[in-house]
Structure formats: C-alpha cells, structure tokens
Length: 385
Image 1: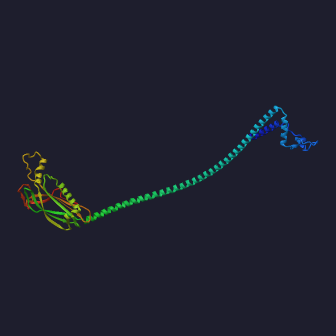
Image 2: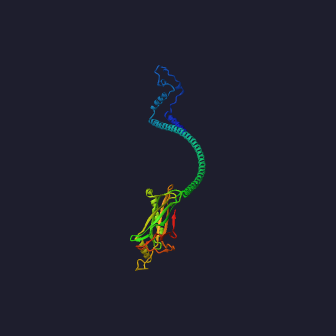
Image 3: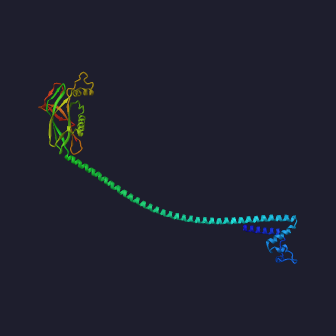
C-alpha cells in the first residue's frame, strides 16, 4: 500500500510541475482545426500553419516563443519548476525501483519459503522414513534378542546337561580307575613273587685280632606264582649294648640300599632271579670289626654311664650279637619293588639244657657252631612287603 501511495504522489507532482512549466500552453479549438493553407495575399504560411496540429513539438515551440517574451522572474520560476520536476521524477523513479526491488525480494522470499516448505516436507518424509526404519530395526533387534535369549537358555540347559554328563563320566572314570587298580592289585596278589630266606649257623664263632667271624647258611626261596627278578641282598653282623645301635634302623638302612640297587635297570646283570619253588642255598661269611666290638662294649656304655667304672674301660662282660638282613626283588610284569627283611639274635646256648649262656667277645675265644643259635629278635622279626 505504501508503494502505491508513493507512485500516486509522484504522478501528482509531475502533473503539478507540468502545469507550472506550461501554464498557457492550451490550444483553442480554432488552432486545432486550422488547416495549413496559404494566406489571402499569397504570402508564405505563418509558423502556426506550418506546424503539425495537435503535436507536442508545436506546443513546445509556441511555449518557447511565448517564454522568450517573458522577463527574468519568469525564467527563474521556470528553472525552479524544472528542478522540482527533476526531483519529482527521481522520487518517482526511486519509488518504482524500490517497488520493483521489493516485488523481486518478495518473489524471492516466496520462492525461498516454498523451497523451505518443500525441504521441510522432504525432511519430514525422511524423518518419518527413518522413524519407520528405526521401528523396524528395533523390532528386528527385539526379535534377535528374544532369539538370543532363547539360544542362551537352550545353551545353558545344554551346559547343565553336559556338566551332569561330565560328572557322570568322571564318576565312571574314577570307578574304572579304581576297578583297574583293584584288578591290577588282584593280579599282583595272585601272581606276584614272594621271596623269603632260612638262616642257620654254619661255622664256629671265632674272635681274633681282626674281630669276630662266623658263617651263616642262607637258603633263599620263592613261594609266589611268578619269578622274582633283579634280586639283591645284604647282611650285617654286629654286637649291641641295650639294643644300640638300633637293629630296626639298621635293617631299614640295609633295605633301602638293596632296593636302590634293584630299582636300577643297569644292575640287572649283577642281580639274581629267584624262580618259583627254587631253594638257593649258600654260605655267607660275616665279620664283626674290632671297632664294632669296642663300640658295643666301651663307647656306648661310657656315653650312657660315664661315671660308672672310671678305672675299668672293659667293665662290660658280654654283648648281644645281632644279625640284620634284607632281600630286595621285583616282579617281571609290573613296576613294583618288594623286600623282605630280618633281624636275628645270635646267642650262645647250652647244648644240653638249651639255656642262653654269656657270650664274651674276647680275642682267642672260639664258640662251636652247635652252641650257637639264631633267634628272631624279640619285638622285631620279619618285615616284608
């Protein structure tokens, strides 16, 4: 509306300026209808008749002729009217340009609004499509989660079942192992070798400068159901005082030594094999060293009773003699180690009464074999596995 009022004001200003510039330029009806004909005296046609009637050029020319007769005031007034007309024209032109620019901007804004509306519509459609896709994805994820939960539950059930089966298999495995061990033990007990020995005195017991000497006849026999291989044995004869050195400890030491020899595969060429029902007899010469005799009759008593007989170093009159023996062997069908150990007391007895007599280990003493007897040491005897 403001742009329209501006254009009307500019047009009114233009009309006013024209009235100022051309106040007397009005053609009468006679002037407009006068033809271009020669004058009555045949003179040249005047200026009025030569101009085309009703033309702008004719009006201007008349006005210029009339204006030339005006004074300076009229000229100044005309100049001011021209200036006012120029500014009115510029105002009208600026308003028109502004109107056109505003119209163009409005068109651009309308086009931009249409583009924005279209873009918003497209964005809304895209958002709706994305929302639909997201909904479908969420539905798919929910279905997948449900399937995974079902699979987890199934897997858990399978794991529990597998655990139970594993426990049952473990129990069965343990039962099978136990049965295998039982079967192996039964086979071993029913088929293993059993090695033992019989001992007897085979010579007099003689004491000299090198100690005491005696021969023992040993018969080794296998009463089991299979041969005994890698057999080793050892014997030790020594005097004691109040069972010192301890015969049981001495037997354990000897058994460990011969078991170690039997366990070595490389010692097979130095070992013996004891077959079932074999009775292998041999004389074994045994010796008690002077140091062993002194230990039993002097050193141990003095350590136990240091102030009993300070002036008599040989106050012990006699010392019991002990024979310690051990036989180690193995079965041929299993990786097992066995041994049989003995502890005997070598006593002097009266051939007639059978009473035990004192045995004094002094140099030059010789005790006949018929007065010597091997007896299991009380509380010890045989150790076998």
